[in-house]
Length: 403
Image (cartoon, rainbow, N blue to C red; front, side, top):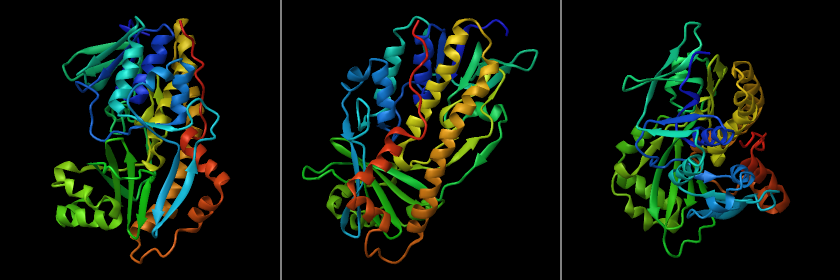
């Protein structure tokens, strides 16, 4: 390996990149995280911190401090179908320190991780620094990155955690498998009415499906519609969109009047894909850059964070001893690809069997679907979807060392 300015260069200051930065710095390595934006503020980023991720902070001794951040908690899920409330998932019995989802703004989570990582002398966070290409040594090994300012930053290992539109995975020309998704999502927020019960996770009707996330003073809403139909919905006008929302969730009819124009409505173009290879000498890809998850279950952040944990578990100790990480990168892929495939298979099943038929449906729903009725009637069965959503399908505890 050529001379490097840092042990690990992480591109992308999202959950996977920041958690990786914390864990590697904690192990005594020098780590630089590059974030192209000036801050972590984004509209409608995934704001669900699941029990699996909360447990990692518990293992780090940081959970109590994390939970001082203003947040709301969700330990069960209900949906309204055909005028009936169906209780479908329960996380209260999970064997972890925090058996619930913490709803907190992602920028608060990322700022918290950055603060904790900055305790370690080897950690550096560079904002407003965009990586645009990979740099290679004379043996065609990735040796660093080029930035938009023309700077070359070199490291012993580059970790690409730059999201589902990753520039670095494209530059590395990794093959990708596109699994596909039948829907896109409109994200918007409305102030929460004082008399809102707040016990619903979603509302289902013929051709329509909306999820409401209670954020304390406001509701973060996700309106699902058939993929590629965003322009058609917009062309019908904001008034018709508001009217559709009011018939879907009558309890929030007055709140929806707050949506005055399309500037208040953001689109998430849903994708479900994964790289067929996550690494080459000098480079590892993790998080959404390695596998874009569907918003189903809100598990994307938590799967990405697990990638970071596995990477640190495998690499931190050997790299602290001065070993070349290249021979270990395949091990990370092998440990993570099965859990990723399992979760994406669950999401695809939900897309194919439930969401796609629902969005294509024209006739009214007369009664809740059989699986929902079974979950509603048998409380113990709700623990199964609660465990899948809350803990994922194959997780690791933190085993990387603390220097």
